[in-house]
Amino acid sequence: MNTTRKDEKAMQKFQIEIVETSSNIVEIVAEDKQSALLKAQEMYSSEQVVLYPDDFVDTQFNIFQ
Image (tube, rainbow, N blue to C red; front, side, top):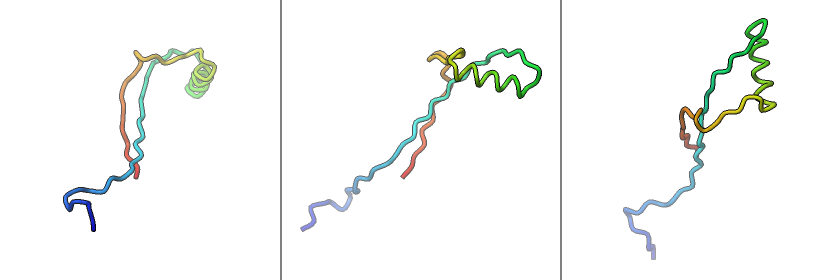
């Protein structure tokens, strides 16, 4: 005997990706754009530039099945 009601849907598992975006503008002195970008990346990697909760911009939710 099937005890599941006809109007009751089966439960499924979903994977939800949560992406938070933070943003901050940093002034870099360099010879060209590529050098400035590289310097900013190095500063971020070495934690000379840190993004804080006040730098929060957006949250996105993406669903995977």
